[in-house]
Image 1 (cartoon, rainbow, N blue to C red):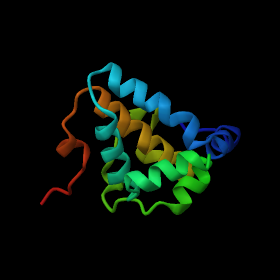
Image 2 (image 1 turned 180 degrees about the vertical axis):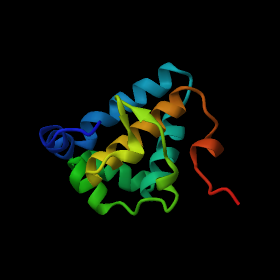
Image 3 (image 1 turned 90 degrees about the vertical axis):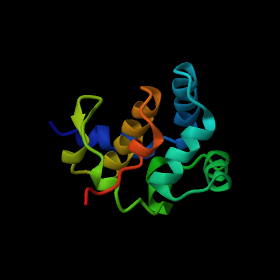
Length: 123
């Protein structure tokens, strides 16, 4: 199943600042920390905490957020279902990156250890 073009546009225009507090609430409700969330975001995007705060302050869209990001070389190892979609099969690059982030936040909230969330290729 592929997201519609309307869905892709909606995600691209959504701001990172509007979603970040929801991520924080989700992980903290499950006993994880904002610092761990920021580590996950840093692993995926290469943004440090200062850059994450800047992106929030500037109210950037996900489209601009991911345009500025340098995606982790192992992000293609993120697999599985999120919001009814297989992240590895999503064709729209922005939607796929947003869903990668959603998948990592879900894994953090579900108690998965950070070293497992930070995918490493199998030797």
